[in-house]
Length: 254
Image (cartoon, rainbow, N blue to C red; front, side, top):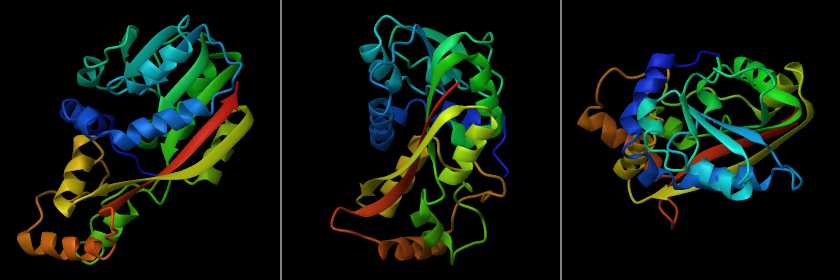
């Protein structure tokens, strides 16, 4: 499966750093859901938030594990600058972690691994976890943003979403990487917007737009925008225009 280049991912999230928090309601709900699924008896001495963004998860993790030494890592320096929680901030690639072997008790990553080669991410996660260490990952599945695919289906041939992995594929990759007690769960989060422009602005604000290969090189024409808008309006609900996040959570042990 083709993934966006590191340079493009970094640039997209550098640009989104200033707007991310204002549009990240769904991302915060997913963080809370991932945290709720952690084992009750987990007491990590050292934890990593891999792909930390602006650091919302650090608040949850440090509230639950106040004695843990926390590391927040992100590819984007601009995102790291917005992490307010007291922690060790580290610029780096989650596929090539700048960390020693067996140095962590908890590897956490919420909505970052979908932009990466997951087999590489899992290999690195296993490398840096102690034997018995806990893995907790939230990613996105194939139904994510299906509304955008419908909206643009009759407008152009460009891909407007990425081809995300299924829960079964994610579970198999975790097992192949050598993790035990693999637990994959699938759920849905839906955001609603007043209109199509607001929906597209929200996707851009969190850095999730224009990441795939073969993307549209320029702006939509007025006619193309109107056609896409008419298509997505067929999905309108009393709450507004829906945008689906197909959420996959993965828990496992080293």
